[in-house]
Image (cartoon, rainbow, N blue to C red):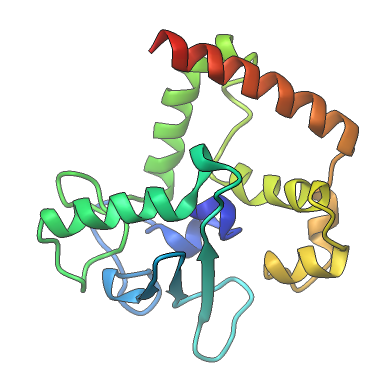
Length: 190
């Protein structure tokens, strides 16, 4: 949820390796700058579109999408992380064994999870990667009525590359309805 609503590139949030990390470029536990009742902010030490001192991204609750609310999922994660007493000087996103959550490991987990639900959701399990979260947001924002300039700013794009991610809105609504129907069915069974 954080990757999607923050329009993050995997390399901005996750480490390159599960056993090592760089305090100069990887997001650490101490990089959660603000955790309020409705939002949180992350300091991105090494954004792709470089800024002299990194970049701060604020992510807000999405009460209109309770199952996809980044604040709820991140709050639960932070409580879990604190319960494990992981130091703030370690990467922000960690596995249960304390190893870094690398973007390659995330892609593997995502593919495994999607392979389990790919038939029910009628999605191709091999088409999805960590970049899918970043590329999907422009269409959602377009559907919500945001202008291209606002979408570009939200996603921190320096070029017009985000235009490649915009999809036909009618097709988007059709896919969205189908996914929600299937997810409701899965919830009833689970």
